[in-house]
Length: 69
Image (cartoon, rainbow, N blue to C red):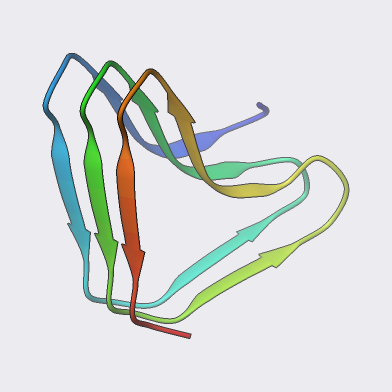
């Protein structure tokens, strides 16, 4: 990606997003590289533009909880 807001390298990472995120123009909001990651999104996430990604997880057994908008 052109830019990454949060990048974590390692297993069993936990990411809690309670605020608003705006990802655009090929950027990535959160990237986790590792197994057994948990991402909790309680905020508002807006993704716009070609190749833009809200959350990218490269690993096995990930859990994503999306309770936000």
